[in-house]
Length: 636
Image (tube, rainbow, N blue to C red):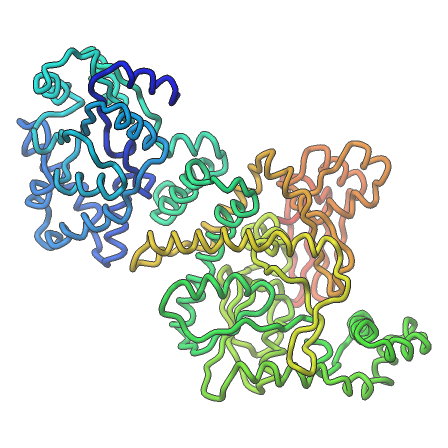
């Protein structure tokens, strides 16, 4: 399109540009979202509706005129909102920015020494529009024609006639470009003016990025969605020169997660009067950096509290499985202990071996080192909160509260299981049913979320005598690959947060957990070929030992179903059915048509567990202490 337009520019004498949605863009899906932003930022209830109605009333009262002015609107508006007049211009100034798709055409017309004019149907003052154009790099134009000032509009054709008369020029010697089909294309075309219709930037990115359009359709009335979709959409369409997929993933996904979650943290800190925050590794790495971009925040630190330390802190366990975790940990950390344990044949009775060697284990100071390490970050006067993502056993809160010997407050995305301790905590998204891995709580892939909320480091094992973290020896190649990608992901995340905080101004836009989860799920459902190609290389391990890794989004070939059926099933079984292909779902239901899970307080039976269509779900509570559940289709 650019080359064709340049050829037209070469042949005409005057080049005319529209302003809004052509030369200048706003960070809003709808223009009226700016009024809603002012209402929320300034706590002016009713302003948005009154601002829209005042403009309508003004146009009706002045129906004998072709257009109205900014002054006219604020003469008509309710008296209590007249003070907002200056504020509206300030918000316009913050939201307006250059359209990098059109700027090269403007510069090309200047280079050819063409007469450049600005032609706009707009009520805003002429001086303000000139200031905004100049500030955004559109200087050196010859004249500007504003409908509100001249009482002539593009839509009626009178503004173009005015221009033709002023320059005494034939219509075909003028070329106009703008985004409105009527006023920028049909009206000038009737007069013989050459013109091109520029597609709105939002239409362009909604067409190119399906998940953005699907999400916007669900949240069209939300100011938060309007702001962050326009920011992300424009970045993807106009500002992605890095050609770095992982930076882009950070910007369009990790950034909005970090912003929304840390905004929740900020409000909870104020609500519970916390004076010190400990961001727990590794999920807290990027969250701490995002939190500190807000300006006024409490003192905070990034700390290590690996889950395994929860078990070795006092060596109190209830099962052989947990005892084996502790024994394996000590054997992996110390060669002498490993030799002693191996000679004892512990595999037959880990609980007994743990009891027999308890004093030996405790002598290695891993728990004492952790206590000293955490106490260095705290003082007796602190009202401490910890930040983590999801928790089942509240390990980090238990571990840190034990180390400092007092209660602390927990801030989590959500909790998988009920808390069995007398802990105080808040969740970004409350989990109402602990027997289901709900995609409306944990998204369609929490493994992917952990990939985004991570750090550029491998897992640690313990805190040494110098109070430094000791990282795992010879970490798996999957872990090293993930860590190598994360610096660029982190850069994208922090750049988004920085841009969004600036755009939000003094009002920190609230993005609810439901909206955020909807956005992430929409991306996961509508992954592009580029997403599929890049994300298939990411593997995740949820175990304590981090030895078994599975791809988050596996690429399963047809031969895998027949050549490696069990391995293929193990990979697919933990992936949400909404993210599987039809053949993946069919394969899983053939391999395992019935899934039975029995735990201490419930039994869950799923018939055709990977069926995407959910038919039946029955839940029976027995004496309010035991639940029996059965479904056709997996529990969502």
